[in-house]
Image (cartoon, rainbow, N blue to C red; front, side):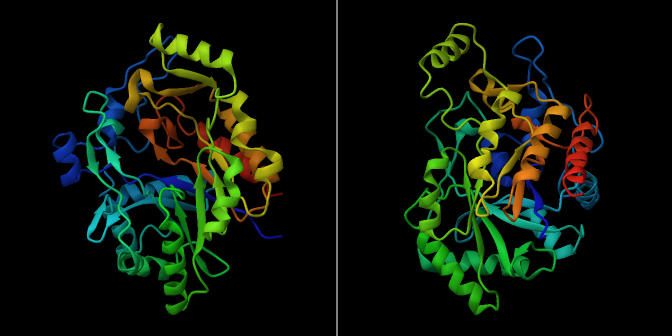
Length: 359
């Protein structure tokens, strides 16, 4: 029986860039938001302080190596690096991944996920103009898609690059963002075959609605990564909306949900067990370091509950991949890396689930 591979989304935001210096101030990285976070209600776990790896800088190869070793210990088979391409000649945060490819280290499998969305000031700074566009995601036609493909060809040819039936795996964050996505996919499929691959294995990242799955397949996606944390929570529940609104506006609290009570939303056993679905294991959530009181917090996130969800997902999935969201999204409280409160407990919980479902 073919083993389902466990991949973890990886954020390359933890190093300074000229653009972030310009937009947010000299030396800004994701740690800036993490370090200034405050508890917003009794028992709210903030700030989150990294333990084993400290407030690391991803330009350092020792850090990247240590991350790979921790991921192996957790039973993770590879990293899925977020990749940012806005138009020809304009990428962001590409440095750490480029170093991984160029150096051959760490010797740990990887693939890419294109974060194809525009960046706005409100993403990280609620005090700035809500309408300020920092950089726009553009779709500039076939020549753009060709340039994008050949920019990444060396990584696709890397022996570490994760493939499915010989096809390099490539995730698209916002599959319905543009009518050009279908043209993008068909162009890349042609180029991949020209370069000796049987094609590209495209995975759609679905954040909101399992009813839209057919749309993704019609665009040419091979599989769908259902990564639904809340989705359409409360939209059909009048009383829940009133309660959440009261807490948010009158009590000035973020929206709070119980992690364990969302297991059926995280993993729908009837839908997410399909061979064409790559389900997700949600490693906590607390968006308040970025969004303050407008954020969403999942309480009751414990190592035991992560184990229970991971076991549920891994023992039922029939797809080729399961994605952990995420390895190191610290400002979203969505990470597996050790922190001062829990150490490596979440790594051990995931490892236990992997071992108990592979017997």
